[in-house]
Image 1 (cartoon, rainbow, N blue to C red):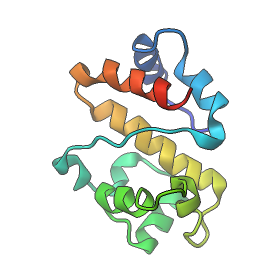
Image 2 (spheres, helix red, strand yellow):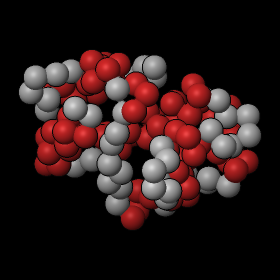
Image 3 (cartoon, rainbow, N blue to C red):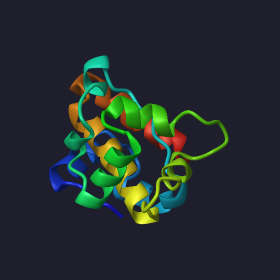
Image 4 (tube, rainbow, N blue to C red):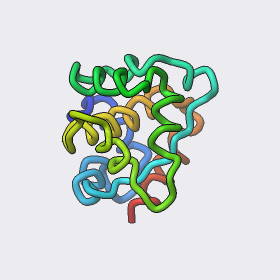
Length: 130
């Protein structure tokens, strides 16, 4: 599992009523669901903002996923197929790397989200994963 910044974990947990984000992630490790809610400006950012390990970053770049928009549209386009499974189609990208990319995307999204939306978003995460 990807390590999250303790301050962000604490902030996420503030918005969750009966659970912690780490418990939710562990319980739903294979099928963790979250909505992507970036602004147009955020979607134009380079995937570098996700602070990925070099292997993950290089695999994405080589596959043509240069921006968050490329990544989101590339892995959230097929119905009935998980985004992790779609990432696994990228050459030299394994399960741990696919999980890293998705968790970093989730983590980054929460960080850049306006405070006014964070409570609703975390409640939505709980709904999607229960």
